[in-house]
Image: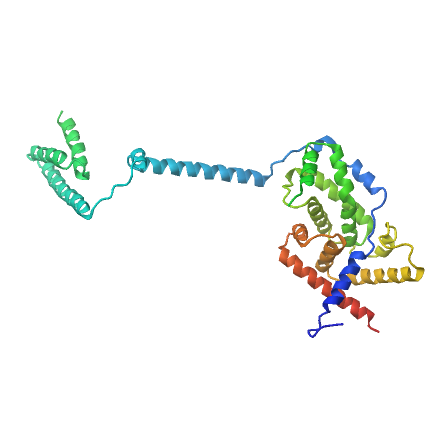
Length: 161
Length: 185
């Protein structure tokens, strides 16, 4: 019996499945069990989890990933300014006016530093430049230019000595 | 997925306990042999391949992760042994004669006429099975003769479960078609 598509009917297939399950199966020869038991390698089977090549690759992979992760963690931790303090203190809310003031300070101090650097290159301008550096250190200590001026002043003092 | 007794058995085997190794042989050798008889169609070759399968199993049991059942793992080894052997002597030959050596699953007290009809039907089924392609034959053997689930079959054949299910259904339909053609006058 077939359905409209020419396929066997489901009930016929179910009957066939039952027949297959009921089919008599061949049995192993009587002496096979004895031969298989005799072939058991005994103590030498105690291999544990013998590491395969894939095992080694996986271990190396995990170790490399761990090293990279640790390295990245240390790198970013060191780069983060004053990381210990930042992590313990809450964020400060900065107003727009404060931001504008910070930018203005950075711009002014950068201009002064640039002028001082030009003066420092002139034979007679070193003392003027050092005065400007000192002014920058006093007036703009938190700016990038103020910190740079500090370094330059120390460097020039060493050169003079 | 492994059941607890299987894990314990594996642990004992890896610890070198002979009794555990013997249990593995006793529990599985019949199934492995039967599978190989159906694949090769030759009792002698099935015998040799069963021994090769267990030899390979002992040497690779350390690397067995236990992601599938022991039965699936052994069938997989047996199947690869069969494939390695070049799929020679595929004829199912005297399978029906071999089947008569077994402990019968059917009622031996049945009427002689009925028994004769049953044997004829068995022969007919084996003949039809012989005419199937290898891929179709193996799924029929695993599912209906070895009582394996589709998931276990997938582990043996290294194919997705859905593919195995579809192949089994297709193989069954082909088998039915062969039987229908044979019965046509």
